[in-house]
Length: 211
Image 1: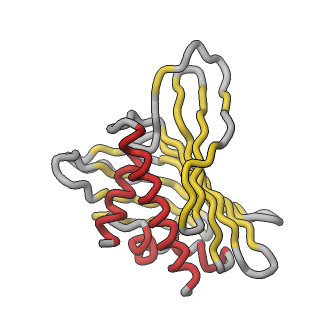
Image 2: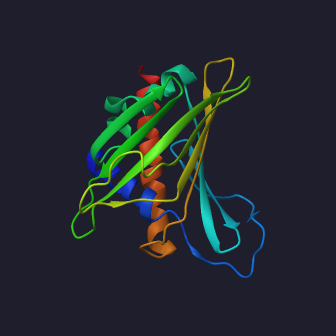
């Protein structure tokens, strides 16, 4: 059941989250206010509109807490066996570590027929500051060779922020935006996406807290 859920999770993450339309003569990048869309299982989901010269798209944000420090959380992203457990539904995953704080992840999504098979290549960069740790995630589509019959997802960016307090609980702030045309209208996609994100973040939380 978890594998099926996250297959859909990865599918909607890469294909449906963005809402992409032409902007009206915009010459500067503008970001709207965050609006709470859903809150359950300790996870809050927000959206805001971003406008630049040619497009108007939505950015998604999730906030939740994990009762673990960053040292227990980071391996959930950088180790293949851990990544499979919460970012489930991946048909194939490969992680190439560049150094202690950087790696590139290849994921082939397990899409149901009749959807075309897609893959995603993302570079992860960890930065450690005095008050927080961040992971920047962005497309690096040429790092791994392209595969015949598989469409590669382009134009993807995400960021994770982690702040650990004195009690050992870490506040997680995640943002993601992608300039990909949507497959379904928002009234169909939003409830499904929100539930899948919340369920997946819940799995991430359980994994980190049991380490």
